[in-house]
Image (cartoon, rainbow, N blue to C red; front, side, top):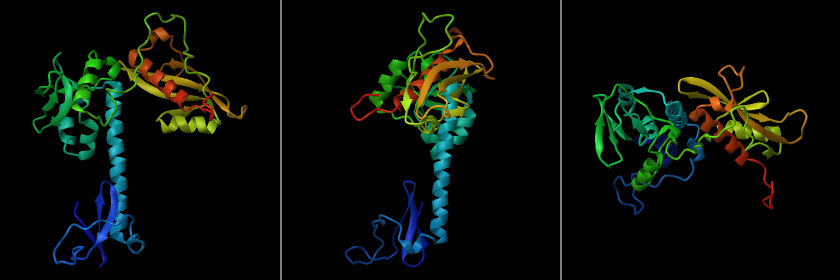
Length: 297
């Protein structure tokens, strides 16, 4: 984006998502005529902060931030849910920098067993170019692809090592998302996990703020996360202490229920994605607990 005149003294532009200003003078620092690159001001000068050009640029920057967050959230939803996504849709959104930042280097899977790799491009012919585990760039043109949750990727460790070798940084956390595998010897009658229960917070407000900052919702006296796993909606639930009965707050056990929340699921009925995402939520809430200055809880 170019520089816009903001009065007679300054020019403004968006630089790395921030509105900056520079002198509109055509003189270089050495006093020579010309059009040199001038260093932008560290802060916007007070006399132009309310000018229409500055206000509109600030609003545009805010919209760009919201748009980027919405794109990342949508890709995260596709990935966590392992939903099929039309390759034509990816081709249409790819020119948008915000979409591209969210999608680039996400692991996509096509129709065949060899059709897996890091997404690098999507063109007008509705084809995708990906880098496979052999380091080769291949072309995929299935009608849809999936961006599997990492717990469903059979070559996860190999993909992680390969991505590290390439210096890949994903815009949406997939390969390095924390995952948990359900133990094979799980108690068939059990309905609750207590591994992360008992995390103490200074208040219910601090606990609920931690939960919402992580993207989870509060429902009654619980932190909840709705997860699509193999086409079924499952709700992961972490209990919370009563905000009206206690000065401090604690997390409770982790359980899963059906979509309506009417039936608690036995642990044996919890699918791999719902299990991993539920454990991820409980672990994140436990990690935010109050810790004293001497390191004790």
